[in-house]
Length: 244
Image (cartoon, rainbow, N blue to C red; front, side, top):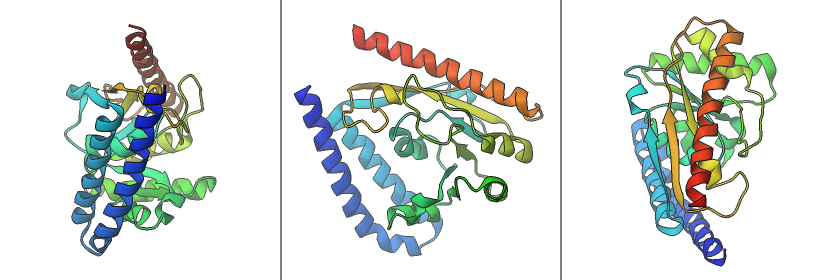
């Protein structure tokens, strides 16, 4: 356990120091076109994932690549850990992530999130927030880019449950594009608000698309069943590997 704590400590130190250096050195890029901001952000993400692999021996693999779309879609992703906020920009390049507005207020890093073309929404703002979400999402689709949303709206610890929020259903109804469910087990290795990062392999599974045109209740039930069923399977498999 001491070794795990030391590895996690070194990861956190490198993460914060590396982020600070890259943020300060790259701040002039915020004045450049979006593609440069995105490229700079990916350098930071690649550094973080590399440092995570070196210090904590934590890597990832992706299944279901045959389900990756050729055009713009809505990726509806399980959210268990801070890991996916790092990795998904690399795994789903070009997708605009739906995030809470307060994140874009973080100096430099938050500004880069906004300049990279992500979608910021005001949580708790009801119908107004939904209208803003749909408006920004439509503009994103017109650019030929996908949208990435976490249906639960926040990180949820392994074994816990939270209701799926209405934002995903609103996008599905208004945009008329397929929804790609995405399951994972990142919380087994990097838990919500947990200091220790356990060694292992995070599994991400891209599931078959849900076609447009379903009623809201049927869509939400289908989405939840697919994501939660696959996530439970991936979590159980990770626990079995740990016990060997």
